[in-house]
Length: 178
Image 1: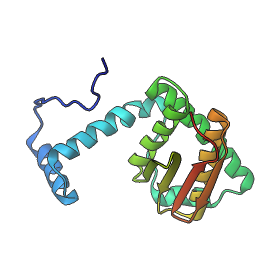
Image 2 (image 1 turned 90 degrees about the vertical axis):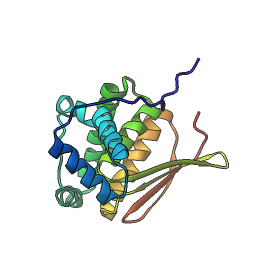
Image 3 (image 1 turned 135 degrees about the horizontal axis):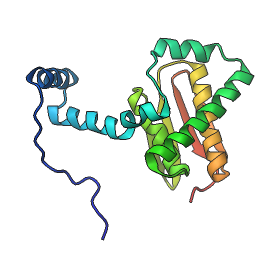
């Protein structure tokens, strides 16, 4: 019998009053319920923050990230893609306990969600489509595009058709993914 992974459980915690007030104010600002915000916080912890120290990651501002990516020449960008792929592999092994296409894409989606980057994985008429919206720069789109191509090639030997703008990457596998 398959366990329902979305099943919820009611729990009770003691939280300092000023902390819960801050969370309630943030939820109100985001126009979501306090429960939804707390669930997002817990999901972020479970999928990302508990592994941060072990994986030696740290936050960096959008401005700094864009600066470094904009300064990359073609050779450095290829090296950055290799490093990013290896980092996703390690993150997937640590957080998902396996490394395959599905776990790698989940790890990439975890990273994107925490960075405020939108990821959509859809199937229309039997065809997969991956859309990443980031609002950073064309060079970021190029790096993301090449990283996704590497992921699909290395893990499934599937080439992608990719379209990109300075804010969006759309990737579609050229053959069926099983």
